Length: 473
Image 1 (cartoon, rainbow, N blue to C red):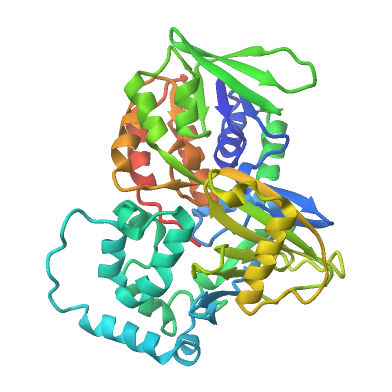
Image 2: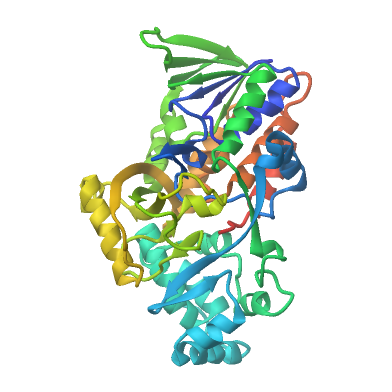
């Protein structure tokens, strides 16, 4: 049995390691020159930076966590969460603290939340039309929190009005689905009240979040996997009961080559996979693939002439007057002391490639971020030594109302091809965390029997588990 894995992000590398440890020949194709994808890391001005803000959450499956701990050892650090939300012109600690809400927020906000909580048990008029992101959250969290936090954040994150976003987004993206749960988290002993609780800590590699994928890649190769960087899958041809994957790129001047395998496991966007297939997917499937939308993002990195900008790891900005949704300071994630006298900020700007901001140059984007920070009360009071950017064309899936039918058509077609599996964030059009992607990889390996057949019934059971995943921020 041979397996070709498309993509060397967490899902692809997790699968490669599991297969290689079982002695199953596996080739991993990655179009980038480094592993990790959006979960990778790179160096800017001597600072290890990530593609936005990433953490390993305490909600990680225990077996997955033990595997990561085994790969990283002492380099996997446990860190206290220490962030802030910029809400109604004020900063509130994140994870939320009761005293912050009482003392820092405008009285009207606290009164509004109290009113929403008090009136929640009262009968409500029946909802008109199908459920949406807006109706689910407003019913669960109340009008005040939705109006001032979730709805403006959603407009920035996905570029849609909350009423145009599927209810699925609310169930998968917002872990505190009711105001009762949210209040419970704020009470003493509730998750999220401090560093001693699960919500108050996270895990982070000493050399950046990408160290997780780097460790998986190193272990997979040591176990016998073959990793092909700078290599693109140009076609996936079905040939009887097996596949031939046409691989292009790799070493300079290398001719295209064909890899034969009984199984192809894809972690690239499912729509891209559909377009690679030979024989071609039916027109209605390709139409469904084109109807699935992905939100792009620009990451703007400011290199500052100072040891540290703030003490916080991340700031969240739901307000629509500030163009970015989140600001992170990589040195604070791993408590890096070096390099001294220099730090890096990463601002996340969700957008579409058709937006004017997508074609702005680095200097213009740096000025845009600096202006936003000043308007939020965080002026850059030191020299900006340089600005760098990274553009992510496929940062997040967009769950526009009605997307489910398009996904079902595409996913159903791919699932019907024996030997072909699509999983991971991109493969299942899911807004999942790294630990979810690694769980999917482990599930796929578990479903591959020793005789080379794939346990489709068990995979369907795992797919039902994947549906229960809720994103951790």
